[in-house]
Length: 231
Image 1 (cartoon, rainbow, N blue to C red):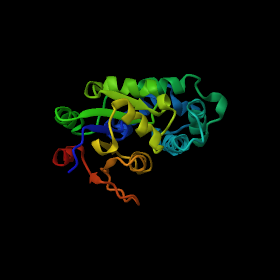
Image 2: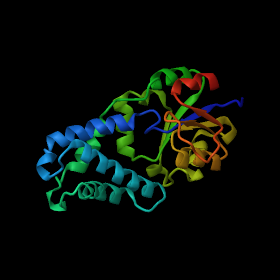
Image 3: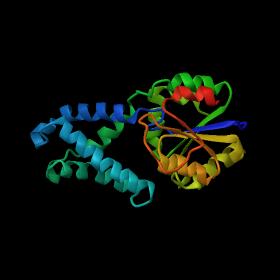
Image 4: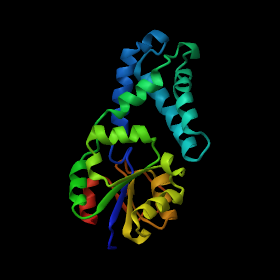
């Protein structure tokens, strides 16, 4: 086992339970805005449209096909259109309300705080995320995860998105450390695992759903508590 000094964590889908928090927010907004009156006959229909469009936009964002402003501008118009709603009926404040409400949610994955408490006694802990500055800061604060981390690095701040190794180089420069002393923990093979590999950093693939991937990470875990046996 290498002597790690710094553990890097992804945030969404790794520590902060994106799916649960987003589902709650969308459900509340569906009721608040009475979306059934706009022709979206069920929450399930709205939810399916959100996931179809949102993940496509984030895939585009991660590879530089769309920027933050256009992602946020186009997200809900595309979602409502996918659900069969004409654009002029979309509530003007929907995107802002979604961002504010979702970021205030506090659900985290099982064992998140337990494992972070354990690791913090032995390592320096940091976040590397492709999420937006204001939303990621609010998520960390609302969930109580902020107290565990010394450094939070975002793609918006550095100008580089995972899997671009430059976001990892930037982080290591900030910490005055080298790749062999670092370990990346994340759920996304295309950004977290590939990005860390490109920066020659060992990786832990957090894979609670047992997905098959082409890459070969340094380690794979199905729940966060398994980190105790690795570290």
